[in-house]
Amino acid sequence: MSHTALRKNCNFLFNKLKTESSIRNGSFERNLKHFSQISNLAVEGHDSPVTSENQYEAIREVMEPFGHLSYEEQLEKKQSWSHQIRETIIERFKTLKFKGNVNGCTVEKISPSPVIEKYRNKDEFSIHYGVDGNPKTVGFFIGQLAKSNIVCVPATHLSIIKDEHKALAEVYQNFIRSSNLPVCYSLDDGGCFRTFTVRSNSAGETMAIAVSHPAERNPFDIEKEREDLLNFFQKSGVMPTSLFHQTCKSFRCTNEQSPFKLLYGEPYLFENLLDLQFRISPDAFFQINVEGAEVLYTEIVRLAKLKPFTTLLDLCCGTGTISLVASRKVRGCVGVESVKDAVADARINALDNNIFNCDFVHGTVEKKLFYALRDLDMASHVVAVVNPGRGGLHEKAMETILKCDLISQLIYVSCAADNPVAMRNFIQLTNQPRKATHKPFNLSKIKPVDLFPKTRHCELLLVFDR
Ligand SMILES: C[S@@+](CC[C@H](N)C(=O)[O-])C[C@H]1O[C@@H](n2cnc3c(N)ncnc32)[C@H](O)[C@@H]1O
Image 1 (cartoon, rainbow, N blue to C red):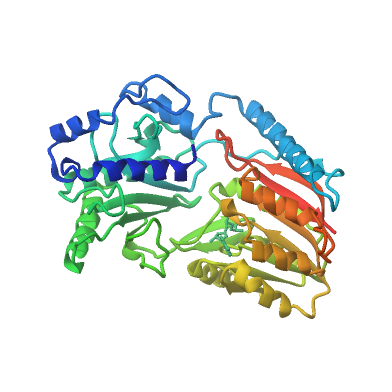
Image 2 (tube, rainbow, N blue to C red):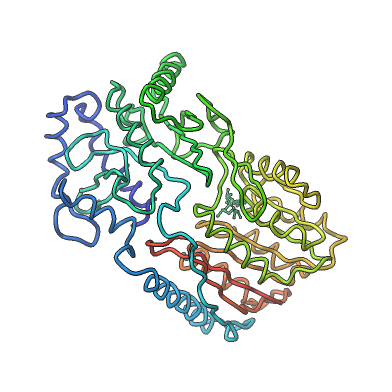
């Protein structure tokens, strides 16, 4: 089950439970009694109950499902999954009447991640009941809604999580346990503590972000929570390099919607990647495995037909990584990104690396691409790299891309190529519906790059030419 699905399940469950005041202010015993109502715990795919003895094994099976395999075996599985993606696209394609070409598509050998342990530079920890019934447990969820058995297990025994992240999550757990404020299990239950995110860079610097629901509290109460949080970390002796606090009433808030308040330290993380330095805001996406990302970006540059006169379109550009890595090989780059702070990072990153041929546009691809292309009237050769995350590309963005004949190659970077939206995007690129006048793309190559050792996930580069 995906993290989002688990979160939805969790919210549903606690909507049911929220009417019972013991969640918010009851004693540990009352909470335990309450918890017994959602017991009969079993991990997804397992029938045996989750207990304090087997909880760490259970969370490993959720978070590191390939952890029991050798790395070679993991890569073999991901290689054959990449072939399956090719077969699925070809099968889907057979059902369509007007087509580009997908049959010639080859699947390259998977590139391994240079690191397979402690590689995650960002973890968003949730808060929920632990197996012992403690309602203030910080970690990751396991369980199934059907069996009403969602439970939170600390990350202490996971090998893909960095030690500094685990240590900070433990201090935060101690903090919320020492506080009288309740946990926010669903957005309208009046609770406070929501999530705790830790990010880090290769130099070992950490950025911690505590997110709370403002509930009915006034600004002074929220200020008090912030003071207490900072004091607690300072006294613990385990201090992040920077500490942020955000209040958020919805599932997730950007800095624009609800500012990240810096309580301590520097406002940004900096990361080195392929001889470039990147500034990263709390809000901005950065690939979770930096060494793996270096391989990914190197492969993108290898596969892209970049010429000195090429304009590179970097769609969903985050902090500008792909543009800046490719910038010296092309005439210019235009990045489009929906998160404002990430765009600010991308612009600064260009300047800090003495790169002056990249421009970054704030907005969604579906809204801004049309205008970005209109401004490219001097371009003679355009290559697009799209990296939209699990959500895939919006219909309108797809339409604009397909209609722009200048785009002769498109590299679709997908961390969830079997996701229905991504799959629809692949078919749209290669299909030519009856009345359409555009030339369809041919899917020429699939290149897997492993960014997520021990998990089922794998990054795919799908190369479309026309
Ligand atoms: C998987 S990340 C890739 C970022 C970047 N290419 C990198 O490698 O670091 C996807 C990015 O797309 C942005 N995004 C998601 N939907 C978008 C949209 N419709 N328009 C523009 N940006 C979008 C997200 O904010 C995020 O920064």
